[in-house]
Length: 196
Image (cartoon, rainbow, N blue to C red):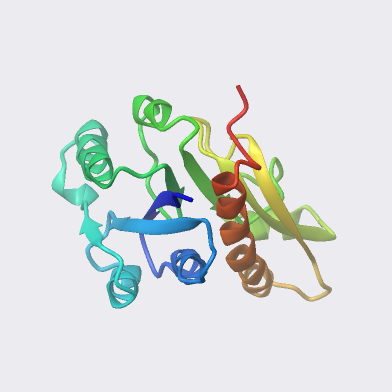
């Protein structure tokens, strides 16, 4: 059976990228990681991907005068790798709507909240400020609206007394590392697809 080809976009340490690479190294996992792209040359995740034998590319957003030109360079790098799915893993760039539309049904993201709650930045603090008793993480299809795409899978985490944004984020991250590989496997096996 042909494995799902996955490209990963990162901006930093790449812990979710590592979880996906680790899952893909297991015999029988239905996806393979074909490329890791970072928009930051100093992203720690690049060295980790290289160490795991995964090809890497840097598409530095600072090298392009406009979002459109950055997106064009990013798209060129992706097209060359021929991925079936593009997984955003701590990728901290807002992409243009036309680019996102061209990735429709091919791009996924993981977000540290139970969407549709607490979209955008600092969702763990948003959950604490709202007095939530639980939070978690969501893998969803990427659409032009930030954190608004159709949900693929979620994992729940209790909010404990005395939690800070950091302690809650650490517990959620543990679940993210399990959920993201599971969601990619669901897509590879045809158990999840972008709704028509």
